[in-house]
Length: 537
Image 1: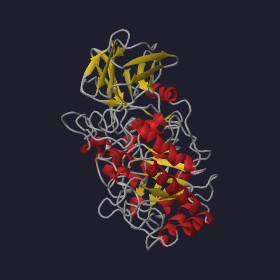
Image 2: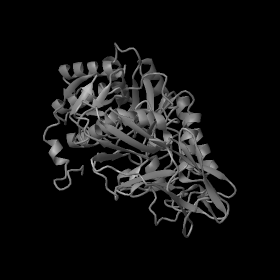
Image 3: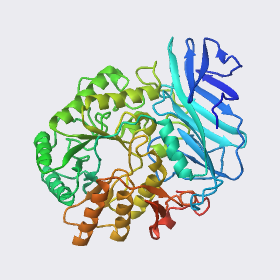
Image 4: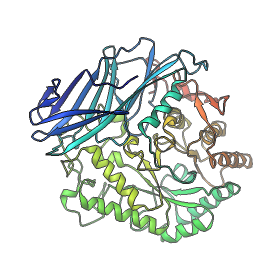
């Protein structure tokens, strides 16, 4: 499929919409397209604030296709293929494919892919119906029009590709490399342990040392050292600032990192950069009011230089302590006040009017600057985003948590969030970043029959494997399963392809290194399917 100019182009300014003529001009500005391997969309609007740019292509959509889109940030068990639906809003990219990947005879198969390159300066939303394909670019600053002034903004690069005689999975995997030709990948395999899914924020210095000893023992024969990531609960206030010291159970964070490293693991740590006193006083003093988000007064605004300085200083401190992986969380939620599954057309509703401090930049530009500040101030440390937008961290962060939380308590939640995420976003792995589908939570509350399969699937996915295991819980046989999984996860050399993902949002059939493997997810799967729509709840 050759990229071409849209058949219709419109711009939504601060208070009115303009359908553009062939010259693509409007009062005080213009849109320009530049063709190459993709179609660059450039915008100049010197006298008007801008909200959206909308483009439509008159492309015949066959009746026999199914459509898949991405998500704004993490998946929430809701990624799925379905028939074209004009009301379905699909962020970042879409794929239209005939047939089914369940049939491994791919002769006659085709998949049409439409998307924007990673690191755009806007949010991008696709819609598909019988009239064609529509792309809407959200150029707002928060919920308000962006004020570009004399700037010529490169909004995004649009890509369109057609793949034939291959599975939809393989096609979309190739397309992810088109959208993201230069990912930033760690120079070593990222895998290991995280304490969240058994501790849930209640941990201590001594317990982290115990966790460290366990993962070091389980990975004793692996070539590369595993990570032990300390999740939320080490800092003075739960899920809140400050980040300059531990609490009474974590008296010396630098010494803890040193002891972890001496035991043979790579120390990792969790942080929530943009919150300051969510449920009480502002714990970090010295920020003027303009440093806070207009939408929520306890959230810091990363478009302000003082906030970026604070992010930089916080990151440098964590690295100076000795932590070599930084997992930053809540970043989308703090910016927009909602989780991805509650975002409708865009992260900020059409009716919202608040703006970031720097209203000359789009929300996407502000987010990218925030991500870049974290990355550049982290030195050689690996950055793992969690609750960030994958399209806006690809090429900046090494790894990204691609789905919502799994569980150490509830198998149904792990199936919904973990299996769905792994299957539908595995195409992004090593194209955008290391795609982390989240942990195997081992607290003794989930039947090992199911956790063992989830562990096996993750370990053979070729993507980052993290396990959250309470010491003393696994039996000797279960410890053997963990050792085997870590041996595979430490290499990430396997190739996993979901087969039934076009019919089943929680795929149970996979090709692993060319061999078909079936998993039994149990009765939990029936709890996750809405009987009326057949789509994930």
